[in-house]
Length: 94
Image 1 (cartoon, one colour):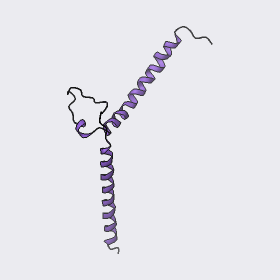
Image 2 (cartoon, rainbow, N blue to C red):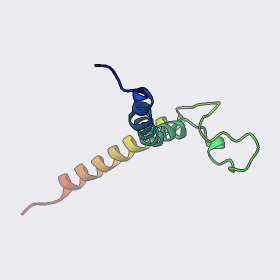
Image 3 (cartoon, helix red, strand yellow):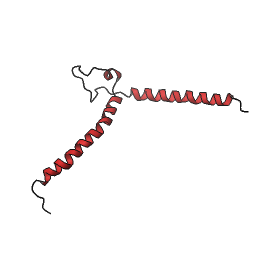
Image 4 (cartoon, helix red, strand yellow):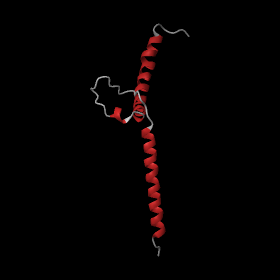
């Protein structure tokens, strides 16, 4: 089948361009969450109007937030389980 003249640009205009914009708009929040998760604390609170401010990437990535979150959540879980087991083993059942 021969394409009618101008079929290629119509495909780009009506299929690939909207699809590309949809993919970018859909994936941008996940990209921004990932960049924010590896950003150090001192870069997190920089004012947006500061010269050379880069909100969409970081120059010194760190995994400190992941380590802190894992430690705090596992510590809380351990304390909660210990308190529950002590309470259930020391209460009298009639």
